[in-house]
Image 1 (cartoon, one colour):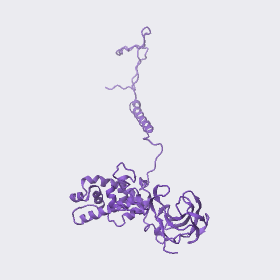
Image 2 (cartoon, rainbow, N blue to C red):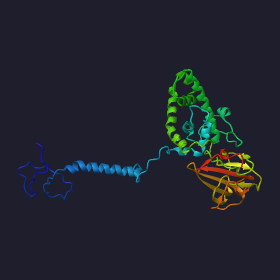
Image 3 (cartoon, rainbow, N blue to C red):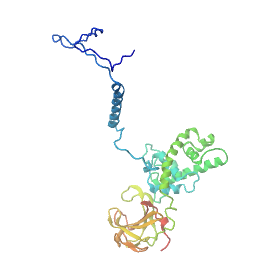
Image 4 (cartoon, rainbow, N blue to C red):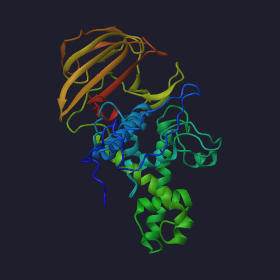
Length: 385
């Protein structure tokens, strides 16, 4: 029978426990010479349910919480979930979306998002590589670059380290593979999604895809990794909708200078002075010093003044068009002819061409921003006044 520890009554320690067996002798740890007569050991009540069940759990839980807090596994503040499509899209600037569209414009089966995901899988959009033979964000070998590489942004050089050139080159390569696997599928040689077959042909070769009749086993992991990245780039492309090559229908702009001689187009380039390769956020129009610069559309002057890089600069806010805010900028001016807060009409003078700021000679650096995103200005411009 189990003894009820909670209700057992024990004799006082001063009374002899005659009815019970004598307790076992207790070892006296006192030093010799100090040992005396010890009282019989008092029998203690056994632990209750709290000590047996609840207390060990509390101790364990407290220890786990303390460990997670010290190691950083337990945050002190809650972090909101990222918005759909916004996780990891920082690997690529949204200003490259028009180039992704251009690279896949005539390619069935390869979308801008797929091309972006392909680049992400190859390099995470990073130019650095441990391999000496594979260069740039698209990891081109020298031999492959001779086949696919071009000077697509018109900056005077063709380089796998030029982001725009690399995007366009990989787009050409992927589109060529898509055409080949589509032909094989039409003949009944292979089965499967064109995008998957294209990625498989990239990593394993068209012949291996043809032999397997589908995505071959060695290529499946690569295809899977690219497809995992696809949703975030689908979101990026949706966040930067097609603008008919950068233009909202009905939102044409008047040329800011009389002659539209492009000396440096929109896109990635190496700055002639800083030698830094990055996005050229506008287009440079060659013009003589003192040539008239006019407002491309009616609006309100948001800024007019000197800046370190752009020199004398004017920014005009044209309001909301098609639900998006439209702005134009005019930089490297020699003279300012408007002030901040001033309203202007299409064709009104805003300044004169110059070479102030970081500039190698007289020209107009002209930008178009749609909801804060730089876009190629050329498609926005009309042919006349």
